[in-house]
Amino acid sequence: MDMNGGFPPEVIAPVVWMTGLPGAGKTTTANALLNRLLGSGVKAIVLDGDTLRTGLCSDLGFSDADRMENIRRFAHVAKLFQREGYVVIVATISPLRAHRDLARAIVGKGFFETYVSTPLEVCRARDPKGMYARAEQGRLMQFTGVSGAYEPPVAPDISIDTTNCSVAFSLAEIVAQLNQATVLPAQLAAAVSAPFPAVAAAG
Image (cartoon, rainbow, N blue to C red; front, side, top):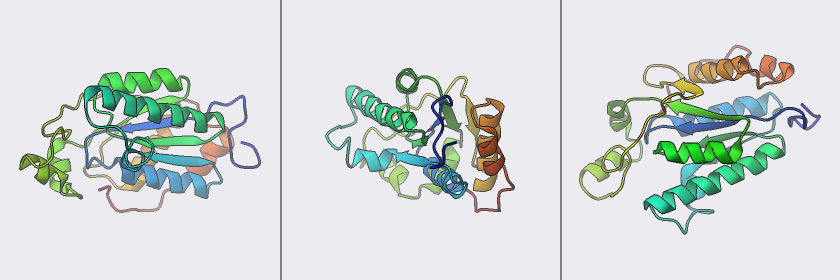
């Protein structure tokens, strides 16, 4: 890493693309990973689907074409930050395999499809924003997991299930799998692989 916490030009920074159902724990896990990286002196950023939807992608709806364009924009933003040496953590449903394939094609090397595989029944029970309830009442259309399809990854680079594990455990799994892929410089691997404190389960 350089003195500012970025990856040197010869090392490709990872793009951790978190996909999963609404309520799976993507944003919780992404923000926890961000804090861990920043605390280790690593340049990192979270690109959250809900946040980008209200800004960069506020002109898009939820048609098939708009969803694909939404992913295209996310992926190009991720690529820009990756080129500047940031670890990029994307938290977005990206429900179709075609969406993730497009993102991988744009980002290229360093892309890690990270499946937050929390089951539908657990996500429904959590429902932190009440969106499943609204969708089941017919008040929210094209909602993934109810009226919209979700295609699970066939062979994700990383897979975690937040049903019964803490955020700390999820982070340790992600870091371990990134290390196994040898994408982390030695000093970064040592920093982020230090013991994780206990953290509440992902929501």
